[in-house]
Length: 169
Image (cartoon, rainbow, N blue to C red; front, side, top):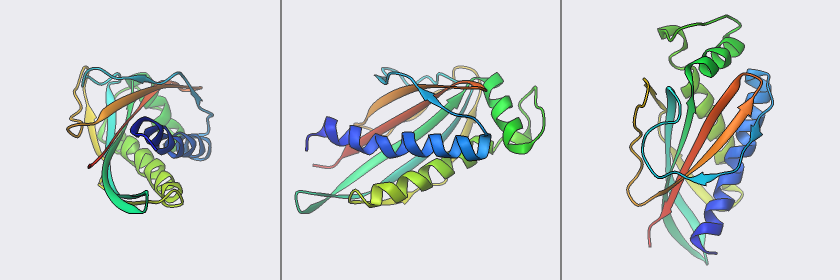
């Protein structure tokens, strides 16, 4: 399987996991837009949850190392509404109480995706999510990876999922 088709295969569990997590924890459905290749490292949102993943995948009978990263980014207004839905409160500004909400969502998505990736031959190790906040903040992607940007709409507003993936040759 070529790199591009493996990347598409690799991406599907994350999209499905995001749908499941948002329906059960944030009480909204997600509508994913058309993916595109991201050409810079500037976040499309004001708040980003970043979570790395690495491991091995069975490729033609041999184990190949891979690296990946999931980034979820929200404009402030969307993030406040998502945090409010999860915590049953109302937020109009970024504060310590909602700082980790995005990381918790990323962790749940990654955990669900990791389970599904295992059935596809991926053995994975998750990192601990980190949060970045601020207008026009940058994301440091693993070297040599292609980043796919997926716009997502919900009743709470727009957000973005970014996935990158590479294999060691």
